[in-house]
Length: 350
Image: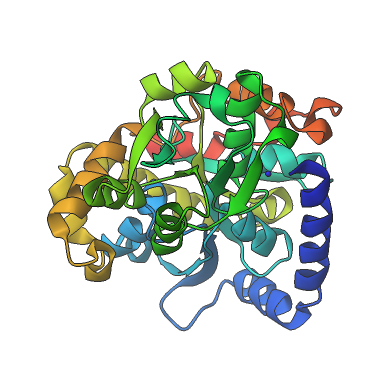
């Protein structure tokens, strides 16, 4: 969901700007440290890289099922259109947790920020490479990315990461195509229909809407473990709850409650149909078409774990993918053991 040198400058600027928001950051930190919210329980703020995206569905579903409340938590879910923005909110101290792709933990480590996934929602990216009808004859595989404009949710996002990897894997240099930040949902669809992009990487429900409108075609489908294996060579742990390690170590009781709630949700999802899950979600997520929304959930369900456990060899796959195109990671030693922890998931399972 990343241009490398260009992103480095943008990310640095973004972090400086957000770091200046000391009032917001200090408020978030003090609220969580005190363990008090507004009387409902321990207050925790979590930034999600798109609350209405199916790949991050466990965040809102956990709240709708009442599992945060049952754990004595008052969780405030916030939303940004791209995972990289959720990452920035986390490292700036505005929130205590981020729901986004696990690969950000590796990227951040090379920048001196130690964060870790505390519960892994998925073992596949849940992403789909879509091409416009007009470009479908010219783009039949990732080998055809050269010279094309390809949509990503944001520069430096995991869709940006995966697009670059697919290009490099198929002999196309990252400088040979143009990544375009178009977000998701209506903005992605509009860019595809107007020709602002030739194709792009996105998730459900955007994928379902594009196919329903016959506005584009699927080029690569990574919504299943099999699709991840074919495109990326192994399981690709993606959506997760990740947090700054120092905060985790200082608030283990709160983190355990969060993980307990999410593991309950993942287990609930594994025993209920897409329609039943859709019925639990906010009505506006369906955008007036409940059947299409349930279909979108059904197409993406295979990406989710049932217990929040990091898939075996998943971190290694992510590292290999990032090293293929990201010089920051390629030339750095990443300590994978510091990018995730199984401590809380194991206790939640027990």
